[in-house]
Amino acid sequence: MGKRHDKRKVVIVLLIIGTALGFYMYSAFSEKLTKSTDLSDESIGGFKVLDNISSPEFIREYGEPIDQDNNHTYDYYYWKGGLKTASINKDEEKGKIMRLIISSTDDALYENALQTSKGIKLGSKKADVLKKYGDHYYKSYEQGADIIGYIDHKRNITLEFWCVPGGRVGEIRLDDADVI
Image 1 (spheres, rainbow, N blue to C red):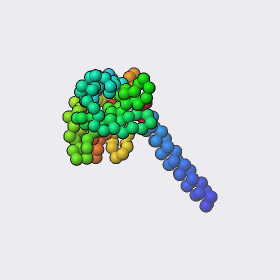
Image 2: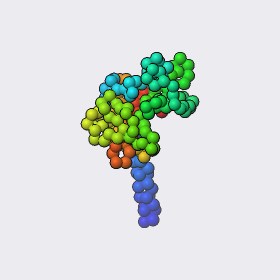
Image 3: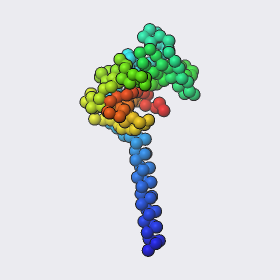
Image 4: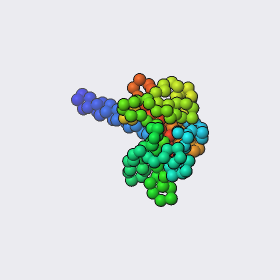
């Protein structure tokens, strides 16, 4: 009876591990499985993914960056008005925007005038996001945020709303879908 009981324990543990692994794999690929949403008109602060921070239009609107963080793939810039961008830092594509972010400071959680093309801004309710962008979204959870994401498969763009506890939008990201 002892060996049979041990085998059951092993089977149960393997089932739990398999289920957890399956859930993780589904979460990692759920954006690819989500139905497409047309994000062709989506911009943040008047700019879209693949625009360039060196363009005269961008410079006229945002001037020089306030601060900068670099990594091996992208340069992250902080601009006036609370905009943050990630742009390519090499070769002929230098300055091409791969990510636009609306975020806040710890001192002023929802203080940012920037918004999406459909009027979602920091502090908007999760229900308002769903009402304006629809039911074709993926869900994720990262850094304490409940993430609602939309993907435009044709344009390879994602739009994510990072909701903080209480169900309000605490950060918005408009990305090239290949940004890691």
